[in-house]
Amino acid sequence: MTVIDILPVEAHDYLRLMELSRRTFYDAFEHQNNPDDFAAFAAKAFTVETFQEQLNHPDSRFYYAMIDGAPAGYIKLNYRDAQTEFRDEDALEIERIYVLQQHQGKQIGKQLIDFAIQTALDAGFSYVWLGVWEHNAGAISFYRSQGFEVFSSHAFMVGNDKQTDLLMRKELV
Figure 1: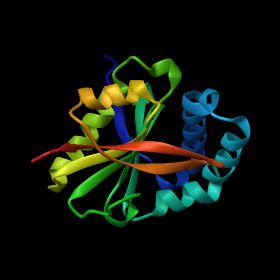
Figure 2: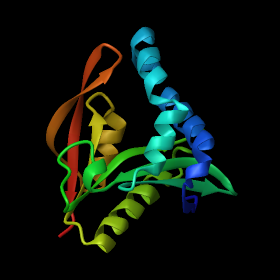
Figure 3: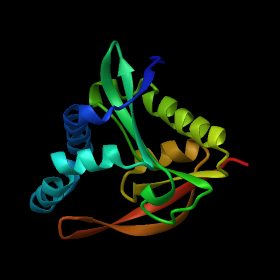
Figure 4: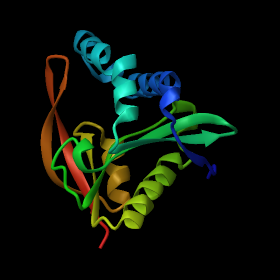
């Protein structure tokens, strides 16, 4: 296991975060989607304005997974009104968790999940939840191994392609 440093992303670092986010998202999903739908989604999702807004939202936090001073991945945690569903005061949402391809297999995702769970416990939340694409079998298996269970689903639009995300949660109390 490669031990990482988990550091908060500062608002002024939006360009580096945006590029890391774009790269990891493309690596993970571009080959599984229609190119036109994927490009339409990316054109809206990966803009300076979007990342500045997200980094400045009072109920969202981004953290880098750092190896030797460079980002190897990141996680986005949402509280209260920043949650994409429910907006439950008693829950923490893991909206994004991504690791660069060259760092996969080093248990960075597990360390980020552990960080999110500890953050939720420290805040007194009773559960952590996330959404994962129904066709992302590796991620679903990983989340299950970390104690998450499917409890619902929702639609997620990639361009004009209506996809389904499974909603998974882990009880903490």
